[in-house]
Length: 270
Ligand code: MF3
Ligand code: CO
Image 1: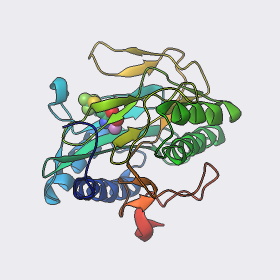
Image 2: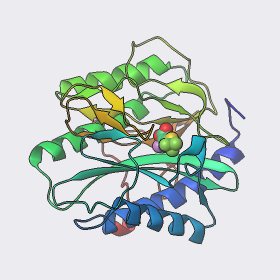
Image 3: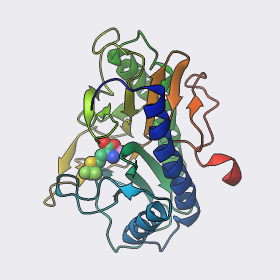
């Protein structure tokens, strides 16, 4: 299935999204120095099973894990491994939750212990770009408006956005129409219509926004070895505005890039 979803279908995607948000909250507690990304992956798989869900990434085009775990200079699609995370690392955990055949996709960059001021700034800017993009995801706008906003906010903060990695439509499949660019021209591209469900997931770097794919066929590492940060939500386009589905409750986003941003880990951990 592609394209446009009913309110009922959007509610089903939000159920998967609420499980994902609950899992994100658990990860925020568990990610610390000494933990391995394989341990995180195993936790995610168990958490999803306990919540009647499955990790859609596992087996997708032969990808072997429930999560992508991208540490420091890995821009995205890193594979979990048995190397303990170190104090000062940053790690992006990306997952797609399948609940009753409906999928929700979200990635989040976490700080491991105490991270440098420059990494914290990068993470903050990446979150700001995500919400700047979401704020532009209004019916009648075009995908180029979303992309241009993300790119402009990144640039204003001194960062670049990886152009090779895009968001996507989502529903019963991980990658549905349309592809959602994070770099582009205002006024261009697919027009946003009611009932579209898409991901927005810009990856920001202070360096060169270019990555090369490793021998495993997945791991995308920054060519200049610099760190990157990525935040991703699944959103539905509604008449009232963009509705974020990968939060504890679906949340209409009516603020702008200055925020306030929704609580990513739910009210309990905040
Ligand atoms: N969750 C990813 C995204 O945001 C998809 C990862 S593809 C996988 O688009 F195979 F690596 F899982
Ligand atoms: Co994702």
